[in-house]
Image 1 (cartoon, helix red, strand yellow):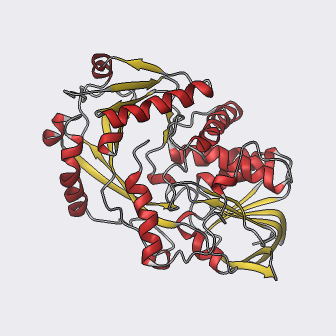
Image 2: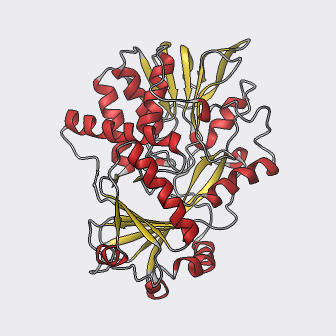
Length: 408
């Protein structure tokens, strides 16, 4: 490795790390280097369902998602290529009075932020979604401007646009530790030599806690298994139809080239000790096909009222990966008190693709000493005080945050 110093070193070449590099370069920061020990987008990014849901119960996250939409438009314009962006729209479908009340709150948040939404009759929703045959629907909230994206193409789009602005991106470049002097992070150690930097950005996802521990920092997050199933193609499934969020079932269903992606959160999500995760996730499955089938069986009673054809649907693939969750379901993004030169961009809570543009813009603002475009306090890495993120008890709290998630 030839680079010996940089203004900013970004560790991690997923969507968030590449977004950080793009936004740093766009803000005039130079030199910036991204270090990825595998291939770009080879971890959680490539396994993401990539729903770009704008209206969220945690309203602090909405602005970060909106920045992703803007960044996609910018990058597609610059590169002249598609990033697999499809403005399908989304349907939040309530099957209970409690879920309906939540939809009312979502709609009010959308109105405040001028995000277009429409209330639909159940019959209209069923016309849009051939698989939806619900007997009892209390409310349907349609967000016509919501979209999905190809997560792999998005990450590479950020990377290509960053390279065009002078960012150096090194793959097969493993960071072995942080260079620290007292309470200041001054760079990184790699197998190819040390690299000094004014800022180091930890965008390593499931491994973020391990990297931070080397600097004496305990990040309030843990890797939690995420998963979805892909159905066999069916002629009745249009390639471009809205995706659905089903809060009563803790599920979502999105189109995928004539098939469906079905995401269903189990009642007790599985957390993983980051010390046991291999460096290369290629071919690694966090749960086999048999376990995936069992989870689908356990969750079908919640999903069947909306998708009665579920029992006769053929599923051809079970996809698993890791997301990083904090106990409150909020991102872990910002500086760490008492530690200079270190920025955390992790704890995506299953929304890393959707919020990647916002993560990158926030990193750029912090690294350049500018005011953040949005309030970052809800995402503070210090908000839980002293924690031990490697204990089973803390990891269980993080896993529970995923199980409780009912949005896209």
